[in-house]
Length: 267
Length: 279
Ligand SMILES: Nc1ncnc2c1ncn2[C@@H]1O[C@H](COP(=O)(O)OP(=O)(O)OP(=O)(O)O)[C@@H](O)[C@H]1O
Ligand SMILES: [Mg+2]
Image 1 (cartoon, chains in turn yellow, blue):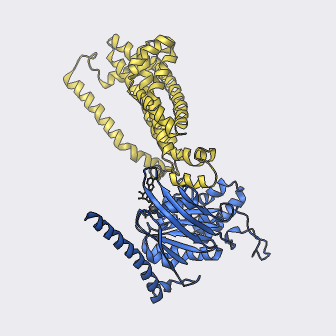
Image 2 (tube, each protein chain N blue to C red):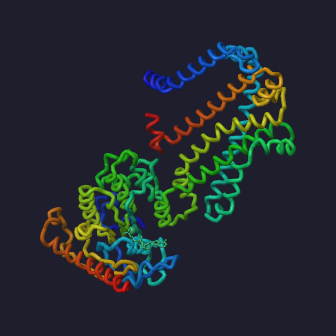
Image 3 (cartoon, rainbow over the protein chains, first blue to last red):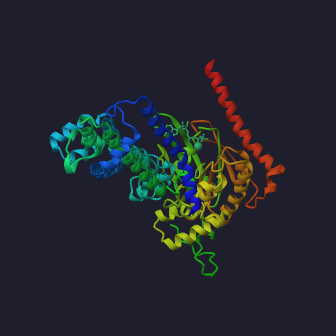
């Protein structure tokens, strides 16, 4: 247990040192150059604001968390479902996958106003932006994963009377083969989900109970409260990183016996 | 299939299908040709009859259609012409490739269980048979190891065990040991010959190594360059008992020479054709 804590400490220490150095440079620069606080606040000031405006940030945190998690889970369900469907035949993949690639090229900021138009300026629209932005990495990676199954082994199972698309082949070979790819997609999407939710909140612009971190960023900048904008951005990043780390940890856990990389990371 | 045959059970009451002799099957390949969709003719008029319990090695230059022939025998590819006749139903067939093709997330014994799982064998019997098969290939102590923890030769043994656990009547080998070093390869050859002979399984063994072919087989079939056909069959008169000393004997060398002479004749003939075509 102690050894384990020590190894965790050893692995995060370099990152923490960088953080401390960056904050120190920021502090020193503001000290020396003395910009107006609404142009560039000092770290101390941002920290004060975080504490004083904790209630607002907490509401924002909860709303953004909720929207990104819901968007992420829907994207996972739809993305994995679609990937399973497209993996049934080359024909289906050829017909639909190129259109799915379009998803990736649609800018989330551009579709957000449409969502607001169709579904109103509420939570659904925010979630939908998070959903849209996270769908493609999940779909593309799980499809690649399902395709990565050992074809010779699938042939050997075919010889024993189970078809390529049989439940046996899916459950014992193709789905397990796809897991490392799926988790790569989920990791990418975890960070994107938070970005999507924030973009959605900025466009939707709904405050009060529904205020997310994106809303607070806009709010802070219209009021020239740059320290508050900084605080909201910092909370957003913390949220994105936490989400990413949670998904990574879940992946390592599931893949413990799968992938050498996951296994050595555990050792 | 997979039914333990009663003969030789000796009344010890042990349900031990994997180390019981199993009658092999006769394979009659008659006039088999295969043209691919690209128009490429890979096999032409292949005739070969393999007796029950016989092991035939197939050698030939790269690209001559050896793997294609095995796939046709296995039923993974259909011939464009000709038939493969087993004198009855398609037999329980084991197929081993150059790579082990194991599932990385399953340990050795769970990998060996895979085909039994496909066949719907119950869990307890599955375990039992997989354990025996691992014992057979000398990996009893490694049943809990994952493929990433096993050497190349050990992975190949797991792959063999996985196939033997299904009690095949016919074994198809597609250069199964080609990726291994010579020492490991010889050792696996010794093991294989023991397993094959003990159980009386019919086998087709594709290899690039003439030495391996002569050591293992009852007959060696030599194929011509593409479009592949069988241009010579060499009998290997050493019976069933092959010791490591055989490899260095003069008789062994003589048989190996016969095989290489047939191969060389076709390489030369091919070369001359090309020369002739150029003129
Ligand atoms: N699906 C396919 N479509 C078209 N041509 C094919 C196909 N599969 C194999 N071939 C061609 O058929 C020929 C025989 O292939 P095969 O794999 O049977 O050769 P091989 O004797 O096993 O060679 P090697 O010793 O290198 O494994 C090759 O020239 C190959 O290019
Ligand atoms: Mg081949």
